[in-house]
Image (tube, one colour):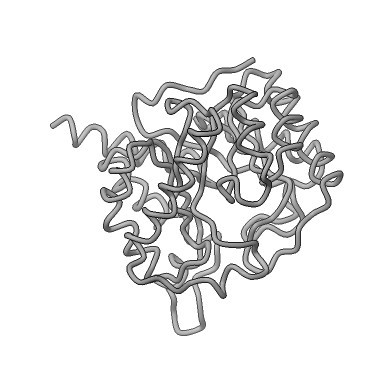
Length: 275
């Protein structure tokens, strides 16, 4: 089984959505062969981790049945892990997490931070793998109604602290716990920018940070033209620019659709930091 890479620099988590309805690449890698081809491409470009997900969490998305989610992700995880990849599973379900780890995953990336499935935290603790707890307020069908904050950074930090404490209380080792501010999940574009500009406040929670900004709507809004939002696939340059800034600030990892550009951005940021 592969092991979670050491964080000598900002890590790159390559997104592999085995779904028909993800916001940027839904349907592109739904079949097994297409998913494996994309996974190998991400590895060749330098991905440290391949994040395999079988359920879309775009705004408004309906949940996939558990059997469907398992059928999408397990064969892909098994194949990529056997090829030596460090694989994470993007899931909110304890059963999927357990089966994915049995198939070779070394990290569970849970956008709900354990809130969607009461069995998740205890299951992950027993599995002894890494765990990403993201800030989350509700499922995709309702999350855009949950964007009220007194101060978004203070509130997100407090809510993430609760998920951190719950994960540690369940027995997840602190060295295996990563936090994610959840850009775009129950947050407006302004909220996302505020979180990014004050990321050091989330760093005070004492855990490594994973940031998933790749191709998200707030970048499309920033780059909007007269005919509307910049389409998702035309947001990659902005994503790489943001990655360089995040790497300069020492985040643990970035989650991205395009690996090579992010690795290049991280290399530049690291070289400048060394002087």
